[in-house]
Image (cartoon, rainbow, N blue to C red; front, side, top):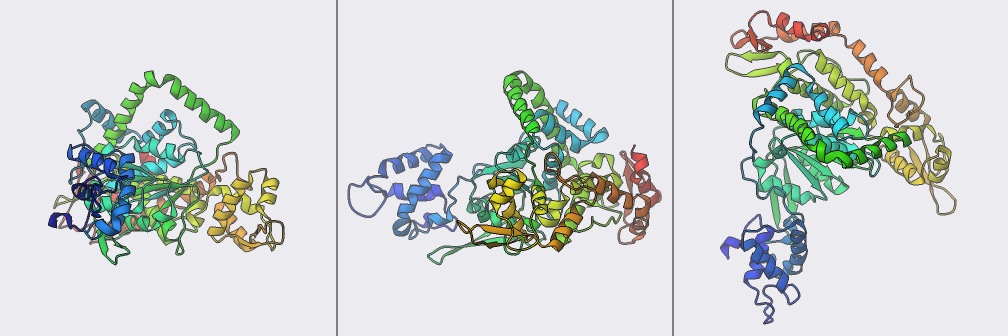
Length: 561
């Protein structure tokens, strides 16, 4: 009995406990299973004793059955079913230390090093997603997901979490999984319909498995907000979750390692303090135009028609990308320094400033075989970001700039332009008719704008008492001025064009304008301490001259061409 009293009960513990006390309802003793559950409960317990594993459906069925016996048998035995995840823990059978599969083949490693040394590693992942997996929405979303996934190899404060939003069935899951399959399998966990407790359970039972891990939380919901706050928490203090049951018992779960979490949902998740969304980079997947939809369907048919003969080539390409991530995980320098001080884009909040700096660091980490690396005499090494990393960060930022400023989908902006500026506003059916869109789509956009605090509403006197929406003119102009001052409307795929804004930003942050901050960086004795400074590695060769001059050569955009 003492062995069964534990602070972290499992479904297996509870099932065996009841099965061992069950006489198949031969007597009315209040022990074990009732007559209806006896056969199933005994069979599942026997399966586990034989060393087999319950299927996902069997696990869920057993969990549902055990609720019947919670108050009278399980709680008195210290096994509250409410503290046991209702979903099977995906990492249950992984070893306590992070499970690592066999290394890539020598051929894959050689091809991966060629990309890391001489080509564009980020674009290699994007090309696979767009050309092999034919993901909708171009490479913009794939680029962000690639950078986010690589950030799991960086210190906690440098990791980039991402929220993907878009209409139902518009390819959110496909673009995420299309990128994640190009990373080592042991560094990826895809969860569908996962309960918050199951994530805490994984963190408690197998913390080492969460190191260097990217979790894709498909179908992100409001109930996930607390766990998202915990796992996306920054800083060096280990976050915890305290679960309290109806019996006043409590269970403290510590989250020792915080993985990168990529979530997808129809609308951005929101809480009262706007903490859920502000801790993640918001990416919107556009709706397909009729032409794009036709192309997507053609690509699906082509894949199904020819995948048998193309699979070998595609798998080889995938394995090379996995080898790239493996090399950076095993050999890469994880500490990144930014010698230049480039101010964040206009309109960025404090967390946005941090996210922009993370993008610069992630770019430098992925491209470190083409970056200068500062080495100290004690053996520590630091990748030095260059101007090209600033360009990469700006490109990603301005692809989704409106989402970071207002945490709304860009598809809602066109609707914002059509709203009146005074009560009683317009209803969803009226706006749908005016804009030629479905009422359901308009309702979703309106809810997005309302939750973001950009529009007002009130119920009007009409059949069904519908909501009337309007937008204050000052707010409308503020939003539109942050999006673009050169474009009047949203184009084909509802992607707001931001290339002009990106070019304008980069023109303001020319390499010459950053040289003063670079000089200040290399003049800082706390950074370049002659007693511990060893030199800067350029293309594998350690150079011990003036660090500022050595760094400026690869920093200049002209030297990168």
